[in-house]
Length: 218
Length: 327
Figure (cartoon, rainbow over the protein chains, first blue to last red):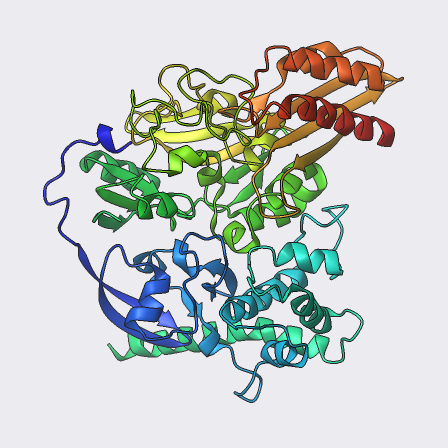
């Protein structure tokens, strides 16, 4: 309730804060306005423009990144609150050989996009969602929340409902995720899932090792 | 956003002290609701006390067979917890019925119960809202009221509380643990919430600077439990009406029952009248409908939300019917 707030000295002066963000395994030291969201830090200050700003209110999912391996909306996060976390963006989502990630390959194979604006967020959301499935996280689509989840189409749709696609590529996105998660055409599902999960932790471990090395050098 | 100063608190006591030391302070944990409101300048904290790293992440059994949940346990972690899924499935179902995967990974237990309304007029700075500016008036009344309250509202505010999780917590008779400048205290979740009356800007009974540190669930009630949510989309939408219910039927009669409603009031609504009407009665469709009628007798629609009264009636009866059928 703004009216109830007592007057505050220099209410309108920006507050600049030094901070270190660990993104895709690399530490970045920045001085940013306290108001800077994780999304704006990534896009405007680290020039990692793969993460997209759609609604900027947590409704569309275009800004989805992994924080310590878990998918979150980068637009509803303050950068300063994520010091010490391991952030993975679409730029850091790499396949086992350092090239195209299996999720990216599945999106291409299944034509799971049209204009592409929501696609980085969709792909990062899939990466987080596959890890959640493997960890046994239940969903609203389950008839029994105590049971182990199965990657049915209904589960995929429910679990991906935080990512909007205004072109309406949903049907093909479900096809791509089904292929990755053990559905009908799941040639490489196990390895793809393993890779998706490993990416978050692997980047995390690399970053932790780097942080350790830096700390050791001090 | 308006500028703010920032600090990360290391202990709950340090957080409480930091809050007290800064006029216009606000706690932030998951931030999924607060940052949204700060971007719109509906919330304009002068100082943020980051409580997201406090050691409040445990889910532990209590001595009497209940469960204590740390305030910072994320929604995904809580819904996935084996003890919640096995003993309190209505809570897992309610959490999973809310928000999106991304938001549930960030949103916390303490923050979830403290959400502010999603009333369109509260969000629209161009329209009067008694919640934002006491005395300004209510643009919802006479406006589009599809999502608004049918129980416990006032001529000053017809907003609803948006949480799904808190509806299940109400049915489970959860108790909040809070810490403030004057020490720690426990309050039943139901006592956290205020009805709008003529002060809709006052939503919670916490004193300024009181910090939620945890939630305790009493031992799981007997019977079967379920969360049923009706909304405008299949996923990722707030409830028009939701029901959290726990029903124990013995020899064809209702031995015990808990009912809470979402989407219908300024608070997650405990259906005391329905519970009283059911106790000891035959577990039949007619009894369930009569209990819903007892609860909804004081209900009032505002035009666009008139449908919620018969909808709530049927959702209550249907949920109880399903639970009785499975007994």
